[in-house]
Length: 375
Ligand code: AN7
Image (cartoon, rainbow, N blue to C red; front, side):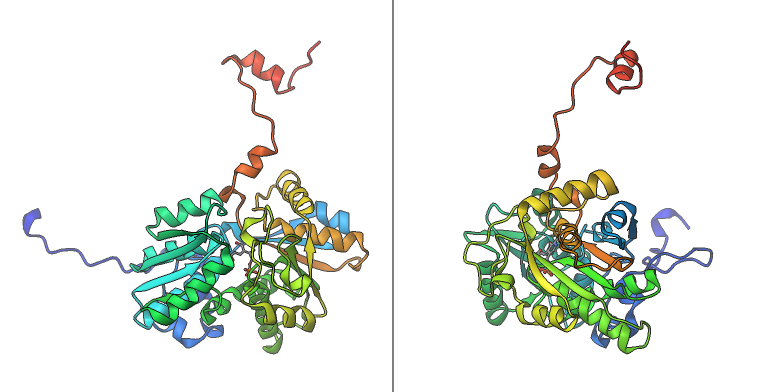
């Protein structure tokens, strides 16, 4: 048989060969029994999201007197926790026959939706606030082939437009108002409990559109109800002070913060977020941009974890709780670091001196690196 007449080889199955060792399968496969059947029984659109590291922080443990762990969601396929809810929302959408997706976003939801839409072969439209999206997130949405529209307005206006389009057009909305998003995002709590062998005493996280705190509470509840954990954590949510509608108990017309991911004035999951915080015996409070920036630098310089600005709100919150004496010594505390710092490197560069240029000379390099005595 010549090459020209060879029958086409069968399409790749994606199944591992007999000798393959284990790979994390993604949250739908790993937690199929704890997700709605619509998600796991049809087509599963996955980039093997989840399975993110829970990193112990010696520095923050010493500083707070607690046992502090960082759940780093920046290692997800598109660099944020949004992938957990996107695999479930888009798997359900594909199984139901959807062809087109839409979302409003401060950046990460758009990046995630665009990637999973590309994987599934769907079209994806994203509405973002003009000029307020980190460059890396915009780059992701564009390179994955989404149609990006910049709205002359904020996230809240963009989400409102998307809700209208969801009603009038043949399109699937994949913001966290889509129930499958929350279902996927609850898996973060499952992983934390499995990694610790118990539920933490306190879980600190940023709050924007408020889907994540809602989802994480559901996850902890389910672990507890199933008898896998004995306790439930106290949830501590943090908004940015210039974008803190839940804290102020009224929507914010023009939210303002350097943490553009949580620059949201009218959160979709407002009610459920308050319920989650209250039922857990916790709170939703605000941290200043100054505290967020300082926590962002601390995470990178002292912990080796490069998270994005919004994510650092959880560490800023942790430090405020510690300073106010609201943590009990020895408690196990988890901070979610929701997204990767590479999405918005401008802030990292802005805070550092420009690296000096030297001749390509070893002696000079050794001296400038402080490896030799000048004398
Ligand atoms: C890094 O991408 O709302 O309280 O449109 O990107 O569940 O909204 C992002 C939110 C925290 C807040 N950290 O989570 C969007 C969007 C990061 C984020 C949040 C977001 P929610």
